[in-house]
Length: 209
Image 1: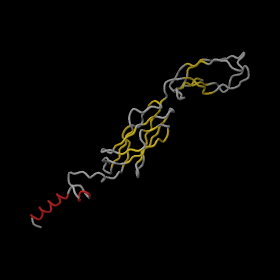
Image 2 (image 1 turned 30 degrees about the vertical axis):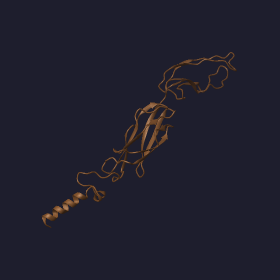
Image 3 (image 1 turned 180 degrees about the vertical axis):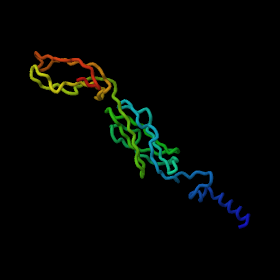
Image 4 (image 1 turned 45 degrees about the vertical axis):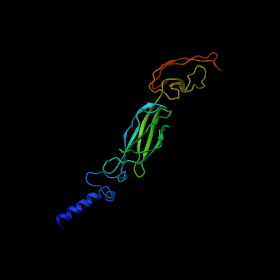
């Protein structure tokens, strides 16, 4: 092959880059066209392990990354979000990754204190989960954890009465150490009745024995 022929072939190859040939392979220094990479990995980026007040939105969004086999973000990938447990709600059930390969949603925690689990899924890839914690609101009232039962006069009530400190949604404030006092109130069968023993006790784990 003559030097002139080699120069012509190089010019043809250079001209082809960015056109039909670019659909098969990228030219040196260029990136693959959008849609060329295939999703190979779904990973949680940020937002896992948060705590917040029940029935309120978490401070930070839940963020996932969809990447190809080289670890580069894949744009335009559909992600499905699902509340697995906890009774919360999401800002969206379906999102699409942006140019960086990332996408996100915001979680509003459920009304009950405890774990809130959210799943993110991409077709053909293992899902990822986020586990968040819902914390009770401030103290709103008291409720019997163990109701008073019937007892023979002079005998102790069994099982022992227990009272819990609760928020406005009925969640026990497990951090409360408030002092709780039991007293008799009006009602059938209280005539001549009295309470003996310790009537004021500090709550432990939000419950007074």
